[in-house]
Amino acid sequence: SAQLNELAKAAGKLYFGTATDNGELNVTEYVQILSNTSEFGQLTPSNGMKWFAVEPELGVFNFSMGSVVADLATKNKQLLRCHNLVWHSQLAPWVDNNTWTKENLTAALIDHVTTEAKHWAGQCYAWDVVNEALNDDGTFRNDTFLNVLGPDYIKIAFKAAAAADPAAKLYYNDYNIESLSNKSTAARNNIVKFLQDAGIRIDGVGLQSHFTVGRSPTLDDQIANMKAFTDLGVDVAITELDVRLEEPENATNLAGQSEIYKNTTGACLQVERCVGITVWDFYDPNSWVPGVFTGFGSADLWFTNFTKHPAYYGIVDALKNS
Ligand code: G3I
Image (tube, rainbow, N blue to C red; front, top):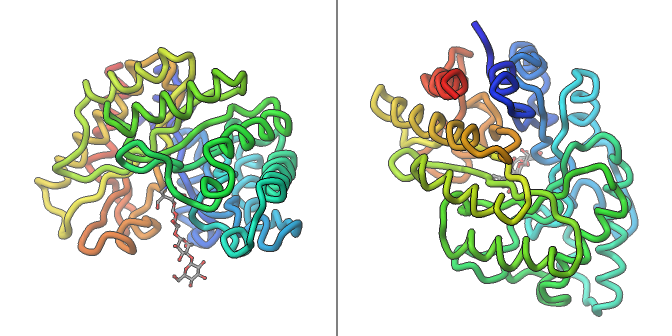
């Protein structure tokens, strides 16, 4: 029967993809599914392109970790979403520990973005240039970049990325911006418009979509929110979709999970400039959820024994009925 990426493309989307990580590539059955382009037409490295891995010391670059997934995507002829250039988390300790002036942090930021984006130029369909720069109330997240440079660090990063990789779509990526809220309003006004008003290129907004059974935005909420972004002239993408449930899984919470995966897929299908959907891994043992949310898990599409969650068929349903 037809599979996720095949169906997404038939429905007019660019890809259905997944995140994956280097340490996950030693399980044969996992890699077979990952590399099946009928299922997944796009990969995102979930850790290897982050600052701690790429520039562990000032001016010392290491692309080996990120290249594992990038090269796998190239070999499989899958699109690559590159993740990410600037984020407060999984940062190299030297960034937070140094005493910076505006001048030398600007120089370090430009050098990081430029060197990394140039390294993978031509391979990245899109870059998450800035990740999670906002608090839930819509204010800017207080990190080293904001402290030293103010919100202008976002301009500096996008400008450098545009110069370094003119072909890549440049995204702002965040969570809790999947329905209309103070945070999604701030993403529109204080990130998208902020850059556009300065004449700096931003091509898209990544809606991470880390959802929980029992509380997630409705289909209509998600459509309205996506349209509010695309009305500004940018694309949107579902970049990190997963739906956690309170363990143990049962028929009821798996059905709830299926409904949420189906609605998010359906929302993307109804918004022309929603370009594609990426799940934040597809195999439960590789999910980040249980390590962070005690008692929650089973957030992905394949169970440990490689049978599929009902949610897989919920997505198929949405893709077939677009
Ligand atoms: O590699 C080490 C390993 O050597 C060590 O034994 C093990 C013990 O804790 O840790 C391993 O590193 C972990 C790394 O993932 C690789 O598995 C880190 O502890 C762990 O913190 C890290 O988590 C990542 C998380 O970002 C950090 O915030 C997840 O894999 C990754 O999926 C997750 O992804 C983020 C996105 O980048 C941004 N949006 C939210 C999303 C989920 O948190």
